[in-house]
Image (cartoon, rainbow, N blue to C red):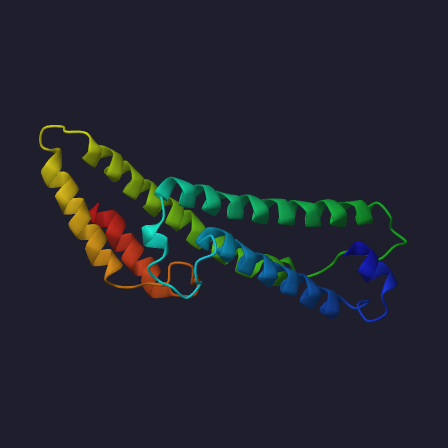
Length: 172
């Protein structure tokens, strides 16, 4: 990308490079969603609920690592260019480039929390502790109520999910 910015005539403006970075970011988000869904239809709102929570959490965490590595490499390249004062600098709008990915990652963190809770309750339900059955039944009722709202869990623009997520955590 640095070479494109330095050599290509079309991409020699800050605006065009910011747009290129934004397109790269959007493609990374799309690929993260595909990784999370493991080949299932991206429009299937129920598919995530049917996945193994541990594998799902692993895939969600890989998305967080990708965002972190992407931003780190951007900053490393920007800082290297600062050492070369005569060359072109990376002075692009970072909020514009990384904003959507950061928003997506905020949703991913919430999903990790939610599916970790689901995994914990699944583990508890497999063991027979005194008084746990009623707690597990209450949790199942809360989960089923949340599922009936049919949120697209990967749609990070949907604020209804965020409100319901807070309510879910309060009830747990």
